[in-house]
Image (cartoon, rainbow, N blue to C red):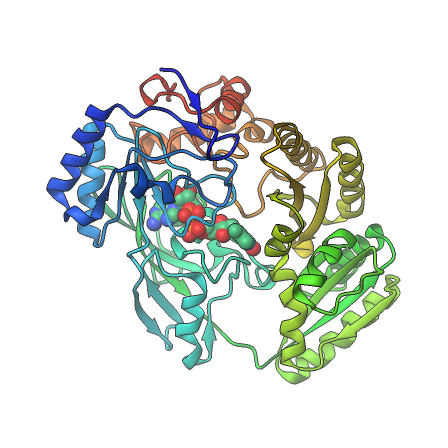
Length: 504
Ligand SMILES: Cc1cc2nc3c(=O)[nH]c(=O)nc-3n(C[C@H](O)[C@H](O)[C@H](O)COP(=O)(O)OP(=O)(O)OC[C@H]3O[C@@H](n4cnc5c(N)ncnc54)[C@H](O)[C@@H]3O)c2cc1C
């Protein structure tokens, strides 16, 4: 089957003609099992689902299904298994690695209607939620009990807990409170066979293999989440943040290491370089230092006494590390203003460039200065601007490459720039993803990161859950041993017909 590129929806829109007979067969089977309004297949109805936050890659799904109950999900998965139809689950569609990008011959399973918080238990400090619940809504529901859900992706006003669990999402507070995987106690999952399995549990240290940890971060490839129980933590009595300026990115990187080696675990430790500050400040008016080569935001939380002591310690460390300016938030509104700049970095990028490509790799913290300088040299080579706004305490980089997707040459340069950054991360001992997942975006770099034997083990796990490879195919794990060739074909040449896909 030929792949045809559409020109109206971005340069890399992939529009493979759907076989109308197959589409009708699948839609009819689904409509016989679910209420008619839950099944969409006309182009105008399926268009809103054609991409996630990685909007440079787009694909219309064959059919969209919007289940309302777990029984609906079970029926959909059984039908897809019986008809050998690929299934891509979708939360809020804010993912940045193409994880929720539909399959041309598949069902897009939108979980947005699963939006109920079933229970907040202040005694057990847990919340039981459906997967379509927004991250921030959990903290809002827990607030009357003095509790909150700690992992806080910058997209938390929109992204769903189902997406967070599938991507093992992180955020500013994860340095101190752990990633999603450290804050989820239990997951209820429907397998491709329509079986419901419970992973983890409320009691500590469940016996058997830790399938919950395996499931978290599996990017919708092992089963569909229908409910989760998450851990809540007490809201600290006080939080204050230091804004520290540095004359070079190396000095800022060294200061990050100095904080951690002084035994401090900040509630957040983020870096914004000069280009990031220049991009964010006119938009967010956060009060950032426009003269600094880089600023750090370093938060302390706890009781007033703990915070006073820790802030004094942090200030001392930053002064010794050569900070050129220090400002400590005086009250809650100033603290929120300091963070507003960091949290609004992506919208700010949208004001200065038609498109941006947010990379996500990790490196050992001690290599921060060196890697940021190498990225600056790449800017020259690729003739593209790149701002850095990231979780410095975790060594989790987010270079934002600014480009215009309507210019094919810029698009190709942005893509190559991103690949080089990820490969640099691997070469200094880091990884190709810190928190945004692999999806389709980083499938090539999985081949740089892992050996053929390691990828074989990933595939064996996938096969144990999903023998026909129907759940989110062509994502996360490069199939077979044709790693590089296959991955490149996938990302640059479009989707393969499902029947032709090499599987296990
Ligand atoms: C402005 C902006 C800022 C961001 N900041 C951060 C950040 O600070 N930290 C961070 O980690 N990420 C960040 N992200 C990325 C993104 O928000 C996260 O990856 C988030 O977890 C995705 O959630 P979602 O509901 O949008 O999932 P989607 O994009 O809809 O899906 C993501 C993946 O989850 C799978 N999935 C969704 N629901 C289910 C389900 N019920 N069962 C099985 N699989 C499912 C999908 O198949 C897909 O593979 C940011 C994105 C944006 C646009």
